[in-house]
Image 1 (spheres, rainbow, N blue to C red):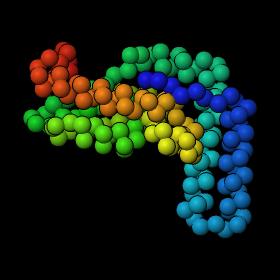
Image 2 (tube, rainbow, N blue to C red):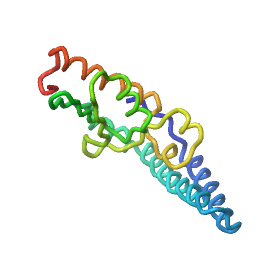
Image 3 (cartoon, one colour):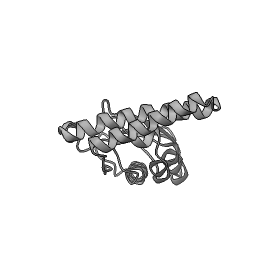
Length: 167
């Protein structure tokens, strides 16, 4: 899956400092609780972003992704229902795109391949920033790739041309 460019450690730390300042300011101003909680979650994401930038710098991310290449997408058919297993934590929009693109009833389950973690966010979420965007390893273009892959697997199973183990 395509990766998004990660911030340098200096830039990631600056973002974390900015988010922490916003969080502290909102608490001091006694802003509405939902605003404070959103800012707090942004801090959590930025902390994850700093960790990702460190892992990028020391090669940990490259090694981890190499261990999971190629990524596994699974499809299990039970009667007239498909259950799709996809890596990472995909945003709802991608699961809905799978459901809308499938002529069959289909259930989508994220995080099914063990240890591979990472949000698959939409372009809008990445642009807005916040928790999921700052802690995402994958580029938003990974979402449509997963959608296309699941729908192709479902079609192959429907036509009986699925690969061994895909049925």
